[in-house]
Image: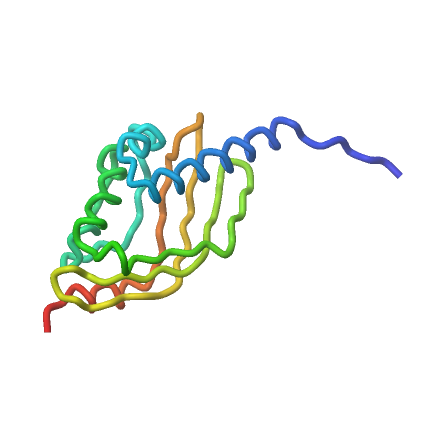
Amino acid sequence: MTVTPPDTAADSVAETTRRVVQEFLSARLAGDGERLVALFADDVDWLLADNPGVPWIRPRSTGAECAAQAAELAEHTVAEDTRASVDTFLVDGADAVLMGHLSGTVRATGKSFEGPFALRLTVENGRITRHHLYENSLSVAQACTPS
């Protein structure tokens, strides 16, 4: 039987990815915009279904634009009603996938949204280069639509 030693380079990449994603989550939770800007690369592959009726969802490509999404979301939602839970955190080299559930209330309409989400992040050279978020966009859009 031959035992192959672990690939320490791949382990190191995965460890960096896990650390950066954990820092990203901490910065989002703390509302630390400066830290978020530092964690995002200068150019980011951003994907979040564009929806003109949702003020915080729009195309983004720079680290500053990506970091600003957290502040824009906070501006348009009721803080005490906002919830996000992560039940899965997978790391494979430079890629991480988080899955969980999110919910909140839109400040302007008083309507709630909720649903599962999946977030794919890629970390290169210690910074986030890809941010693809898949969520219940219909629920979010309905919550943003005035009655």
